[in-house]
Length: 198
Image (cartoon, rainbow, N blue to C red; front, side, top):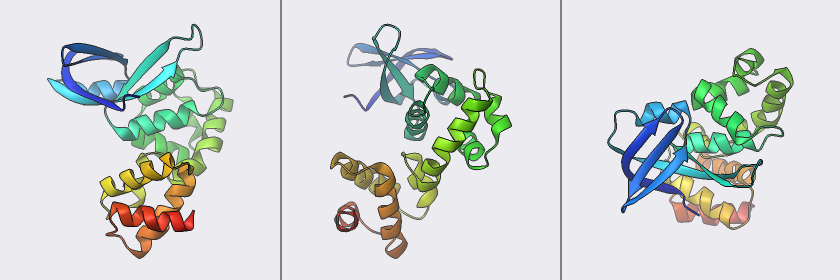
């Protein structure tokens, strides 16, 4: 599975980007948020999420300028009734930070302002995502929860623990407790301490 691609931007539109790396052009669907981040740049790094098109079963690669945006995309598509197209619409209508604030504030009208999102869907998004965003599921969480901590260490430890089979909300909670006691913990220390707690 490809996690990210770094290369020259050979094509960029508000909905699509093509990155050239080693003579190969990788085409990805993007949000307006990613388009704005990549505009006027000659090259860049795009984080990838592969989705299956429910209509014909084909694979579609979605690209994101940040891991934070990709994490939110994953959370949104995990909500019942929210497909990749709807998630991209949400992330094109507001920034990652604005979306998280709208969920935490239970701002139904702000979420409903996104094209294709009705009252019931907005309520479902709040119901299913508020707890996850508060607890810190996804890559966006460490930034909010551990401002004084080495984010790279948090991300590496989180990924390692998830790969070992632990679920992300439990991992995030354990890491938060560890860093409250020892904010300067290294990756290995975080993983060892978390394994004793999980």
